[in-house]
Length: 486
Image 1 (cartoon, rainbow, N blue to C red):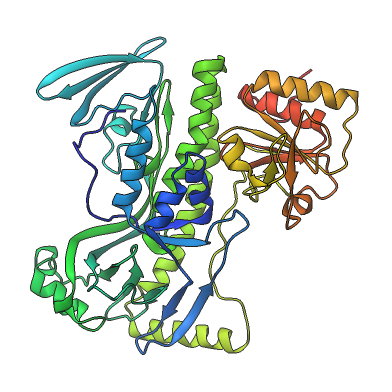
Image 2 (cartoon, rainbow, N blue to C red; image 1 turned 30 degrees about the horizontal axis):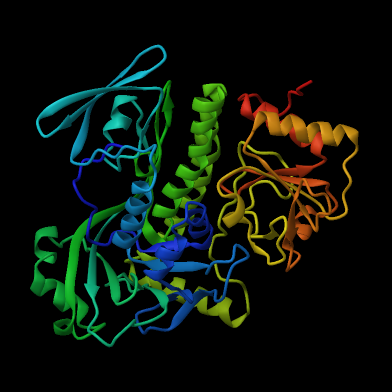
């Protein structure tokens, strides 16, 4: 791992993380540390200039992944947890204060030029992944361009530490839909708060970042003299997505491949999903000899999903950023009428994965967090804690696969040696017993024999085991699902 900076970035940037991504961080053993630097959000409110709630989404308690629906967190604490976990891994070399300055694709390797302390280092590797942000050097090296999804607005972002004794101004995120002062107000972890102020066309970015100007903007929300301003910066909120994520043996993910406005809190989440989608595929290509075409499934799956989320965030952003007073008044009347009539709020649904997986009612959904019982034990624990970041074959309760199904299980195990075979209420000692306490898994299975789940806990599909094994073989070979494997 090559990192240009010598230390983590000590100031907050991303502040929101959903339950699905927190669960993925649990697969690498850092969810508890992230939770300790987080506060669960109780909802998301859009209010007008009189602070009347126009539309809202409230979610409390735990999602079926076992984590709070939305979490407002302190990003430096997340980065610290990641660094600490990396330090425990003997097969990872971390090069800090180092910058990639050149990439050369060779027939079977990539030659990477790295500059560290004025010394040039050259490293050959099988594959290079660029996670190097919005101004990605790696993206330029592969000649990928960014497609503009049609949103570009300047905003001032201000992060503060709250006075001692004030833990949070609100447990809800708020969008102030005021045509004169569009503003976001949200927690950013314990003892911290963030405001984002949309800039007007005549405002100078240099002027608005002066301390006196910042404290003046904070005055309607809190006594500005009581807070410690940690950071202020002007950003352009925009929606961009790369047209190419892989060129031979070089890939990009995260902000290098896509950027979105923050109105759904999904920027960092989308980058984490990219990484969990990719990592096991890298292992399969490098360690198990799987065809490198498998890596094309990363963009096939993630790019449309990210684009759907970005378009949803832009849709919300346009509601917030309306500066025409008459159009804003029409918007407010429409929302109030919908609220009075009991019509659902216009929050776009979170897209589910629909590309690169099977076409059935389960595919693309996030697997609910089941509990499992280890052999020789009686106390159920999280399945993720027992098996970690591996593919799962989950067999329905009381299902008894025929001979061809048993053969298919063996074929799956040969294709993916790390795959774990589980069954709801298993009596077969060769399978891990799942405890489906709230019947989430059985409901997802419906009347199907099994679920096949990728390591990132996205359901690949459901059906009989033999068919799933054939489709998985196609998937791992980069083939279309319409082709049948003998």
